[in-house]
Amino acid sequence: MTQRITALTTAVFLFGGAIALLPSTSAQAAEVNPNLLRRCQNALAERIGQRIQVQTDTLTPYFISNAEQGIRGQGNLDSSGNFRPFDFDCQVNVRDGRVVSLEYNYQSSGNNGTVNDNVRRRCQDALADRIGQRVQLSSDTFRPYFISNAEQGLRGEGTLDRAGNFRPFEFDCQVNTRTGRVNRLTYNYLSANNPTDISPAVLQACQIALRDRIGQRVQIDRNSLQSYFISNAAEGLRGEAVAGRETQPFQFDCQVNLRNGRVTRLDYDNAGSIADLTPVFTSHQDGERITTQGFTLTGRTQPNARVRVQVRASTAVLGGLIDVGGTTLVDREVIADRDGNFSVQVRRPVVVTSSTRYVVRASASLNGQTRDAEIVLRQQ
Image (tube, rainbow, N blue to C red):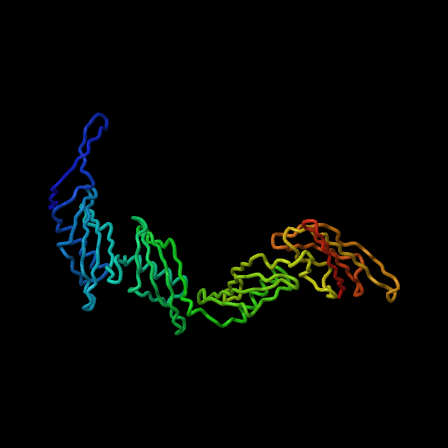
């Protein structure tokens, strides 16, 4: 070994009664081992380009173990006459000459830090996977930041080329420098480039999802809608809607897969609280025809209200002279959920014809107040 140690501190410990001397890991070398430097220079040339120059006056060797040593320093990459300065940290196994670790950071002239090229590549790949393959990052906007010895972050801006429509965005990416794994990635499209057109397919998918979740009388306020881009395969829609008459507007956020039309996310707040306690039937309207043998009745009132639901069926025969099969199908009490929703299952009556009618009553009680509602349904 040609490396000359100028200072060596020792530590003493006892093991089975013997005394041993160990070199401290902080021991520094005054001269660089030429063989180690050559190994590191070759590794840098293979990794980032053949035309590199290492600045020997910046080199700092350091001790790792009896089997490994490291070198830190600076250099330049000549890329078609464009010189790019970089820092590097190289660790070599002195027994077999193998480079066991190599890290380098291009020095960015646009900020006070240096951009780790591996971090940049990991972030760009993650952004391409998340929002689209045709992503370009603007190196002059990079703002690297330190998180820990094992993690670095990179903030900046970029552009997504979406079928010739260039969409600028900003991003924040955090990378584990030991494993190369992206631990966190966030991005925001600049507001001036958010889409303004509302996709009819997205609107329809969101309205169907809201009706399935809340009730068939949900209506979306088209004047409140704002669409936003997620990826080439997904789009989002935000806005306001009402769950029915005498309900307050509520806000919703819906995301749709553009390839299969499936709603992948649906959030809404309070689902339109009822202006008063009076129950509102969301599954059926007064006079509506029932086409099934039995049905599910849903409605809305104020959250946590106690609701008594009664459904009575009767069937007219002999030209309406006689009612037969008069039966109470439902007489039960339920508690409205936190959004004010309630539902009951109505069984099939014994006698069912096209003249069968259902009288549906609901009575909601909360805080000493009671409100009633009634509708009449007929069998198809």
